[in-house]
Image (cartoon, rainbow, N blue to C red; front, side, top):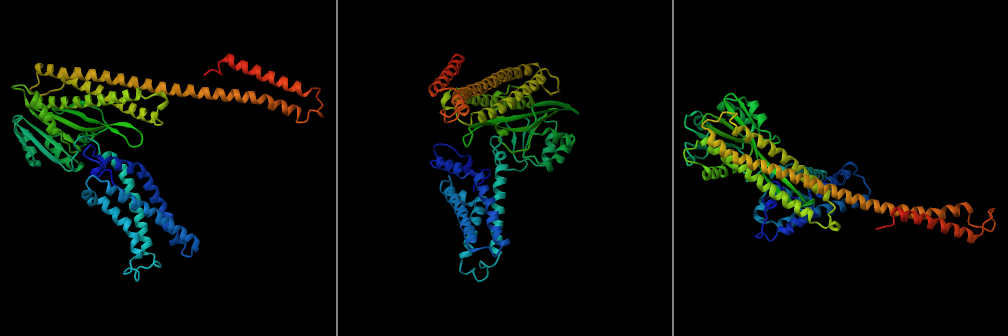
Length: 488
């Protein structure tokens, strides 16, 4: 009953973890869906004795036995996942796992001698505690399944909460843990600055709106993770929405690749630049490192940071395309007779991600085209800088073509699989049709003549019937042979 979204063991991999394989096996056997099913199954098992207290002994014993079996499975799951945890102490002290321990310990209250005088089996209190256990297990498991994928999105995700960093004057003057008042001072100062806001929540948008002079609803509408890269200009602000992504290959259940995206807003005003993200990431440090390595002497801070952001995102897209190409190569090298049952599920999931990647790269290309053409005002941006961004534009165009080729290749693989499967199915159906037609002739003849030919009103002998039937079957078989239905 572990919580994948909060369990540090869930995402840890590597040769230094000797219990990882055993932990994955336990997760595959005792899945979330199975534990939810057991939790729901406990509802009637616990509720029936409360509603019908005069239930027969036979039925009551069966319900008690079922209750013990399910609780035993919960205990087994807890014990195995604790035993195979990477860090058993952290696993045990995790809030969800402490809740698990309380849940599986509740049934043992019934056998405690010091509790029996007050809470005997004749009172419904412990039964009600069991109902609480059911709600806790089922509700927590469902919440884990809903929140689990979201917890893993974005590279380098940190705990929630607004965090502000600043880069003032040049690429070496970093200010950590900037306050909201300090942010406003840096933004209104004539000295060039880069402000990075991560972990921005809805309650922070009002203060942010006042600081940069943009409507709150406008900022909120732009910070939509499902949106594609785009660039706008409003009230002396150049506003760019981008997405940093990384690809993850999931081995549990269906083998599929998922692209996690972290959307963030870039606001350029005068010599200043601001990056805003709803999640906390380590993008500031990564972008700063790239900006320092690629910066040219005398280059404005806004241009250096913007180039570092674009370069970082394009580098991430390159890694994603590399993983997609590796996955396509793996699918192509699977022998036809060893094609997994989840092939279509895997390829359609991959196709969905590739389609979205193609659209993202297309929009990214449009953003870079607007920047290099200087169709939006960026203070300090000149023709030499446009030539520098042209390099990123060329890389984006190339990646877009590569992603489009991957999309076409994937579509060809899906079409080949469907055609091959259809062909194999047609062969089976042809064989069944031949067998059915050949078997139909003697069945029809025997039905016409009856079982006793001696007393039949027909003027045929047995050998004649057998001969005609055999000739008809041979003729029909020859026809099927000429049609190619009997060929492998």
